[in-house]
Image 1 (cartoon, rainbow, N blue to C red):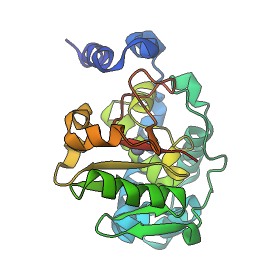
Image 2: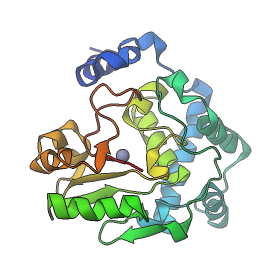
Image 3: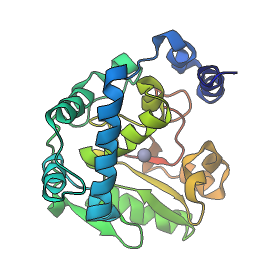
Amino acid sequence: MDRRGFLKVSTIMTCGGICDLYADTNRYKYLQDYEHKDFTAIFQKLKMIQRQVGYGNFNIISFDEALKIAKRHKHIGEFNKKELKLMEKIFYMDASTLGFYGKRTVRDIAHKIDTTKIVKIENSGHYLFKGKPKEDYKKILKDVGSTLKLTSGVRSVIKQSYLFYGKVIRLNGNLSLASFNIAPPGYSYHTIRDFDVGRKDWGYSNFTSRFATTKEFSKLRRLKYISMRYGINNSYGVRFEPWHIKVIL
Ligand SMILES: [Zn+2]
């Protein structure tokens, strides 16, 4: 089976009715051939910026700050006009054309995370918004137990871009399948309140449907003050994400 055929089958297996789009490979949206080089260059620069500022800081870095850091450090190099244009195109595109039906959470690519409104969570490298998200997380730890941890919190537009671009590259430019696995920048609830949890020492398995088989997940399901943003066959057009906590305001 070729790669596309395999992706088609494996997606149907994890998806269900809502994802008809993903069963129809003719409707997949891809990066244009001429965009691949710049897209990869952007991803590499973002990766180097992360190395430069550190994992924790990179979670909350703004677009403007990222541009400044790239310019300031010769080994990274300034983003050129073509790269900036492509970043804007990806950010401002209508994600529903890819098959992602979530609402836009951030309107402006230059959106800044207000650092007075977030708090760093010890030993996680991640931040949470103060107020309901932070309170929920504290309650979750109490109710589920110390085997649970924060695996991803606040994500700026840049951090979300980094994750999305990486996924697109691993999927050979398939923007539709990438958006099934991760919200495009501008559409993530991590940028405004949600967060992910997982089992300590479970690594990448925390971001697979296997997380739904854990005792931690069973306990999470019983909690009334939170919800699951991306359940099975959700209306967002996103895969089942049992680890993603929807903060209810
Ligand atoms: Zn998440």
